[in-house]
Length: 47
Image (tube, rainbow, N blue to C red; front, side, top):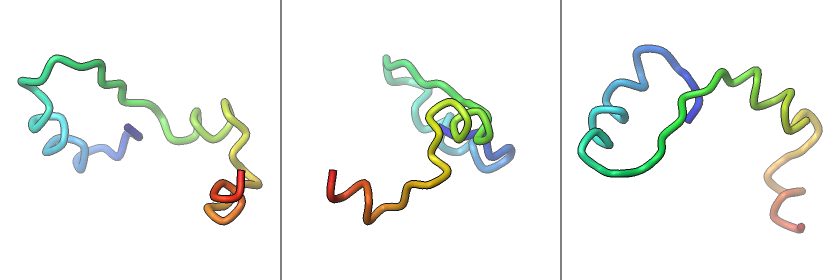
């Protein structure tokens, strides 16, 4: 999930008892790592 500061805590607490991998990452890192700058939902839906 993207790191949104304070707003992450309720979600993190909800997943606390579930065995799963959960990663909190910087939104800027996601954008640059996958080069999402030019994509939109309509483009993604047609792929």
